[in-house]
Image 1 (cartoon, helix red, strand yellow):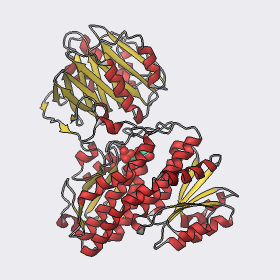
Image 2 (cartoon, helix red, strand yellow; image 1 turned 45 degrees about the horizontal axis):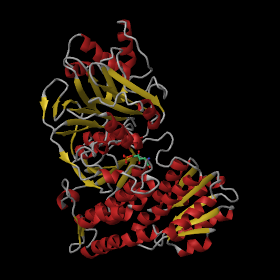
Image 3 (cartoon, rainbow, N blue to C red; image 1 turned 30 degrees about the vertical axis):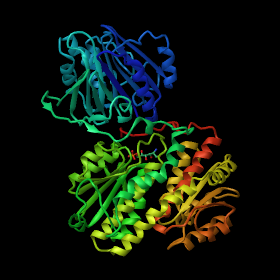
Image 4 (tube, protein in one colour; image 1 turned 180 degrees about the horizontal axis):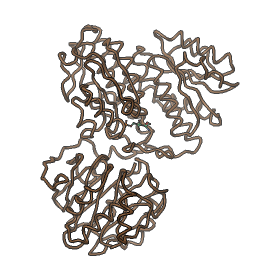
Length: 613
Ligand code: M6R
């Protein structure tokens, strides 16, 4: 998704810092980029289709290096193809205004006709340019920038995060939010804007999250937030416990590999200090997780997208098993439009790494309107999902930069496990002893995760991935908690290797998809000793009988004996096998993509945080 940066400094130059900010936002996905800066009255805009390195070539002459105010953007095309003309910032042709935008202006065609009828000339196909002309029109009428922005936004339907700069009397730097995230950070000598706290971390760890309807005016050392009508609002900074180092590759060739390796620490950070060993229970910090509240629930409705949805599917198995509460799960994008019925006292549980996914947010809001109690499993403190949920379990995965989610998934599954234990203890379906045994086993996962990440173990997985580099397609099969793991293994491969991969419930294969199996087709079977292990083995026989080449992943020795190749995973209880089994699948996808020469951290067509519908 698009990324926004902005800076206004009393003394220092802003361009290099803005370009670094855009580099940090690259992970969100983009196809063009640009900056606008002013050093005096005239605003200079440079923009380019393609990677940031192309833009840097345009800036290499150093002509703009002294500017003290600017805005920058990485664009992920929606209205208009990726091109130099459609890249942001946009202007109104006056040379004294520049605007960047994330989101969609739904009534842009009608506004464009109105503005063209007044003689305004458009130079792009974007919806955004309408906004720059609206603001420019107000400035031409003598309005201050902040008032011009407010008046213009009153004409707009849609959702947006914008940053606008103008020069001349009443000019400056103004931003507004209605939908996509925007954060502000202020130091004594400067003020900064970003779509993501990661872009602000080199400057400050005290950030202000703008809320929907906020308009902020920035100047060096100051920010003022008002609503669209100009009423002052109080928005206090929050201290972020992430640091800039966490947002670097730390010596790894890719963020994805670094993040896979962080998973043992992520387990510890997300779980260990929440465990109450004496009572075999768990404590959460944010919201009401009391026995009384949890006993009152009739059901749980999980809403999420993509990888987070797979974590939600694991949550369903765990919560139903430990707490005996019915759990429904739906794609957030389906839930929000299917006129859902939420019977009884429902806990709507949003699962999201970013906390800004548009569909998840809309589904959460709908669930609240329908009377559900809301909770979130989320990785970003201060994100919209967290702010709008009554209770939150923060996953402490740290910033996840790789577009293909890895450590955030493991953190979500661990958080779901903790929640299932808490629900089970609150509702009396787990005894102290049972709770304690489950939590002790969770603690024991850490060295087992480390074993999976030992160089020799990784190399065995990598060798298998490389051996299948020319395969036309893959199946990933599992049952129980390992069914979502099969889905996740297939999604990882699709996302970064661009190979067709189907994740399937192993028992469902014979109802159709088994027809796709031809001699030598790689079939990854995920299994762990437990309630469904022998059923999975029967399914394994079925695919082998049709010529499938079976790669057995997990700790079920009997499955390994039947397989063509094996990836051995340390044993644990079935409920926790998902946490371990996903790691070799992440590594499999990583090494497969590497062998195919794919751009692992920035896969084509994908954005890290999908803040539009
Ligand atoms: O930030 P979220 O967890 O809400 O994002 C949900 C999905 O967009 C995300 O998991 C996506 O599927 C990733 N690319 C998975 O690797």
